[in-house]
Amino acid sequence: MDYINSDVGMDSAEYKHDMARYVWGFALSVVLTLAGVVIVAGGVFSTGLAWSIVGILGIAQLIIQFWAFMHLDFSKEARPDLYLVLFTFLLIILMAAGTVWVLADLASRMGMGAGSM
Amino acid sequence: MSATMSNTGAAHAASHDHGHHDKTGTVIFGFWIFLMSDLIAFSLMIANYADAEWHGIANGPSPHELFSLGLPTIETMALLISTFTFGICTLGMKYGASMKRTVGWLVVTLALGAIFLGIELYEFHEFWTEGNTPQVSGFLTAYYSLVGLHGLHVTSGIIWGILLMVQMKTFGMNDLIKSRLVRLGLFWHMLDIVWIALFTKVYLMGVL
Image (tube, rainbow over all chains, first blue to last red; front, side, top):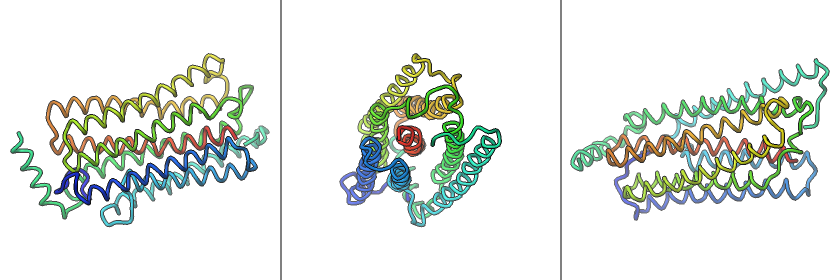
């Protein structure tokens, strides 16, 4: 994929095709954001369930935006970016989860107890 | 000038098959590496926040007591619309849009970024004047540094965008300027992705 130049203009089918990806990404992001707000504000679900749903909606929107706006997909052109992102998320899971684990363990050893999540 | 531009354009079109091997592709991939290292920094700030919010309330307010969803939702929408308008800007540029159109959408994007920043600073000011300063608790320290770090990124994105508009006017839309605009676009999209995590963890889960 070429980021900066195209052989065709804005009236081409390629432009409409690429534009559709942005429009889908935007529309889905709006829906997922508002769904999260409604779930939290509505108070229909139990706190634990609402927490899980909101988390899943967030992750879904994250993947959608990587696809729609940052052009990440399984195409050959995007492969180096995809490997980089996947490796980054491996590091993030190890380091972020490790950080929370160590700090929470430290807190419990200091008798701080687990406050309300 | 226009002759040079069409020449580089033709040379670029001829090298389509090389994908990431051409200079623009290499530079953009390098920028991706920067973005991912930035993402790691943000994620560790979030991990720090998650613990501070859990064990570091001290005598200060809890997230549930401090936050409401109204303004953060408007803020989120402003940034979400701005990431979309930046997409319209860079996609049009790729397909040969006029500089006027490209600059126009960039201005819209940066203005939405400024609205986002304004709401964030207003909230900071409100919390601060209520006595909820960073010194009150580990949670508040983590909150101001995490959300503030993101705000600092948006601020630098706005400054960068303004400088880029000056460059567009000065040098015209050559391949180097286009490549810079695409990189700022990636930076901006990344900031919205980071904001999804912040909005979800800090505000949505905080209010629950």
